[in-house]
Length: 88
Image 1 (cartoon, rainbow, N blue to C red):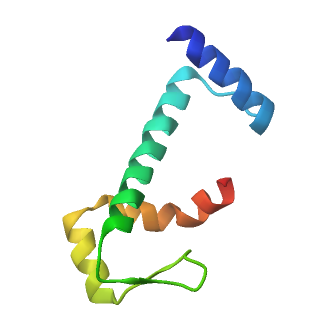
Image 2 (cartoon, rainbow, N blue to C red):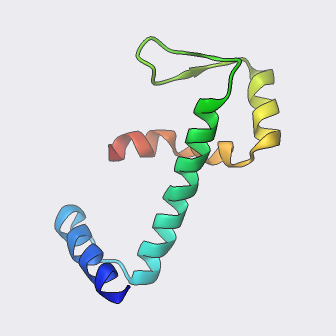
């Protein structure tokens, strides 16, 4: 709703000190939602292990190639992983 986006813009400005239009916020929300869904899908896959602190997926190159063919959104997750970690 209009009121919801107005509140979101105000709170976003208070935290990030950046002003964005409603369209920009919607686009970013959808982008982050898709990255999150790909991350959840990737974590449900078997055939790979985890690093010592559970932050890194340990798998060979062939495993990654197979997963990227099945779900191309995995590329987004890998490309944005460091940026996502910086947010949280």
